[in-house]
Amino acid sequence: MKTTILNIILSSILLLFSLTAAHTQSKTEEVDLFQSLYGMEKKAVMSEILGITVDARFWTVYEAYELERKELGKDRIALLTSYVEDYGDIKGDKADELVKNAERLNKGQNSLIAKYTRKVRKIVGSEVAAQFYQIEHYLLNAIRSEIFENLPVIGEIKN
Image (cartoon, rainbow, N blue to C red; front, side):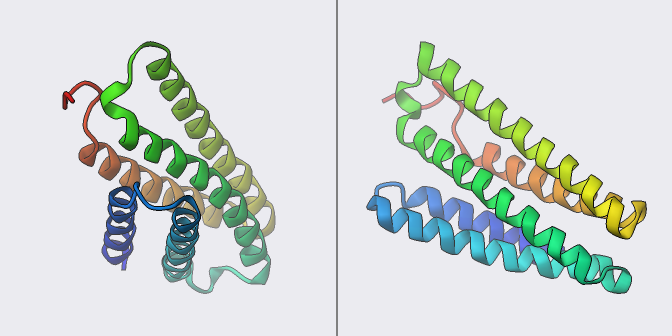
């Protein structure tokens, strides 16, 4: 199941980048669809790993987490789309802004996971909270690795 979700996620990300020339509204709809599919697959993985150790209280907190995560995800997709569209012209201030925005998003994602790990721990205990933390970081790191493997380094491809 873990391999399946990663394949779906990574394929979707690559597809999204290949569609950067699409109309803005269409792109927004594609992002929403991607996030919905990713969220369903991720919830299935979370459910499979956590099993019967969680109840409705966990899923209520998890759904709140997912809403916040999706907003950060939209910002990350916008940043990556901008990078794909402009990577041949990224110099000076534009490069600094790219790094600044990427760091802001990374810190935001890490803070969000930490915030919800504490909430999960309060309602269902430390073990489930640690599992939640592990799963979220595993998926986040796998996605980040795949993105970096498939994006050109700034200046690598000259116009």
